[in-house]
Image (cartoon, rainbow, N blue to C red; front, side):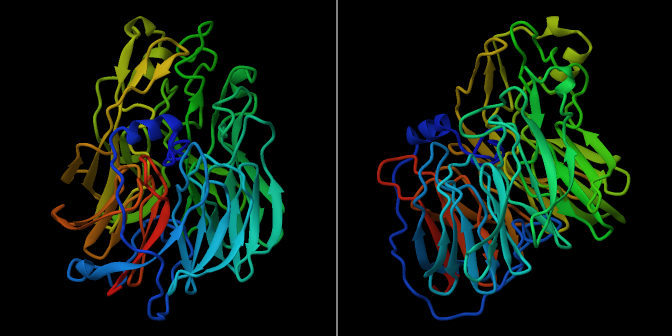
Length: 515
């Protein structure tokens, strides 16, 4: 994966992306410094994606009839320094406090009413992102690039920390999952110093929330890496899993590597077969880690096509569905009980390479003739989390190519553009689409009543009518962004953590109805 959005994929916008944006983005500003607002009681769910089902459906007082009353209440500087930007996560609101993690792994607690910092836990460990925290049971759970941790919610004091990576090729790039006293954190085959280094395996760990004790683990790809751990790597989670009321957990899994292959073993021949469970949506028993079913979207993937986004659980057409998406630009709705597909839809720009992995598996590699462009590329597809109001799923899409020059040489030539796509949850039919011709939709979407919020890499945040796609509100942030917005009550918090032009200042910007 690759961005401060989606691994590396959403996970961390790469330095090349920052350079591309710097050429296109002009410095802008919010025109406000930190200021205290009237004391208000705020609460939120404590989950990174709004709830355990990952719907990102916020409710609250912000809607089409009130959204134009939003005014800046306070701002808070983001001081993390990284080649991947400063911020790539979703703030959490719990009991009147905003909890925030930057791309140096540092965690802050900020009073929601005033913007005052209550405590800071410093780690100063650069991370690709997307990272972030979950706040449950009096604890703030998160991860550094090497370890999962728990902090006391009131003081920020570290309660426990558990190393999870097994070698220098692995890392952690996700906000944890939490359900019924268990914390879920996955490793990935990427960190700030290594990109799909040989021998890196994405492993999901279930940890006791009180002590950090390891309860079970699930290997998203085999530890023997299809017989060649000296060449191959893959798997892992970039985002928070979903949990249902029946005791199951749903995972969106990353891609295999090397990709497309090596000069000695081209087109992934060092990793024969479909490379389970990469690029798949996987259902496990949340207490034991036992596999219940899987659905692989792109077997034997040749490109950086993680199916990494947080699965969404929703009821439609009399069925419980799980929705998944990833950098392949494919959105799938599966029967949550059986894993069988209900519908599948491609979004964004595709140019005929969706089945290249199947060609390689069948030995038909003569049909693959570099150099060529692939859409979607490593920065393309559905990099960031989707949102749903139960009727429609709102999908941020990036259109960016990947040029395959040789087996080991890849380029991301640009240009970058984006789309916000609205699909019917029940059928997958297109309801509407809004195009962003000059910016990428690296930020997750968020629903609030009859509005869906989306951000673009140039630092714009917009609210769209959920039924029509009409723009109802927009604002320019003080920096580019590769994150979406958090909405709770009458407050909206927009992270602007991608300073891509001179004069831009990474900040958390808090809007409130009436200021």
